[in-house]
Length: 253
Ligand SMILES: Nc1nc2c(c(=O)[nH]1)N[C@H]1C(S)=C(S)[C@@H](COP(=O)(O)O)O[C@H]1N2
Ligand SMILES: [Mo]
Image (cartoon, rainbow, N blue to C red; front, side):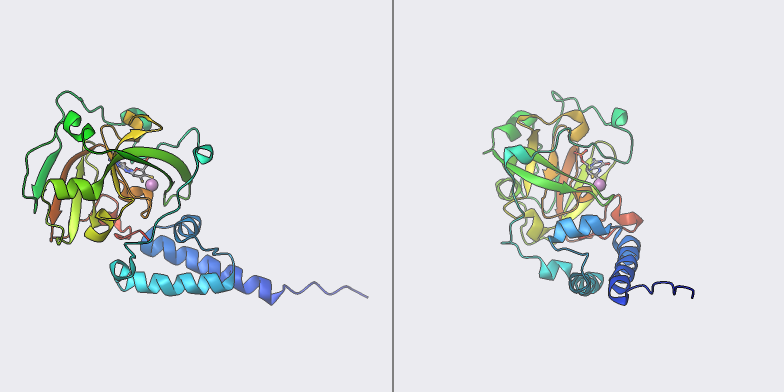
């Protein structure tokens, strides 16, 4: 008597199919891997209920109401020094050796758009602002994440200091390597959004964005601009380097 082949267990097969479909949708619509999404949302996307929940959330994202569900009071997880990832990965749209070398002495941060005082800032002036630090997880859409320590000024403090119109829709960033991106004002004002000048208790190295990186633990890695040269507030959608190629603009929680 021949043995019948074992039938696949439906309960095991169905969710994995859902996950494959979800992963495809995430990639096509948000340029986001499932691993990155589960880290960012803090939910386990390997069980069916969580998948359904995420699918539902994604459809809301696709309706363009992510900003409406952003909770300005919800904090991203912070970690102890012992959790820091070493070595911390480098990422950009080019190889590490091509990272722009910004001349500290001649550097001035330019301000534009809906900002009252557009006087450019030298690095020493920026370093003199009240500094704080944070150990948080950086999550890249390419599917990796790493914990690092960044130090700098709370971005809200900086925006208030220069008289930015805090009712503007967007804050945009231009970078020394021709990268650019933009964020929603509620995220700009989030207490964990920092304009950082330091990494691992040292001056931000070239690879990680000297002279400054905007660090937002509530957003995916590509929304965190390095080598910032100009900051502006605006009501006109500024887009971004990856966003203009189809990546989801909000990309945050
Ligand atoms: N100016 C600039 N900022 C950038 C990028 C870039 O190519 N240029 N890449 C982004 C992406 S996709 C990631 S994951 C992080 C990587 O930062 P790290 O090199 O400090 O890990 O920087 C983001 N900010
Ligand atoms: Mo990234």
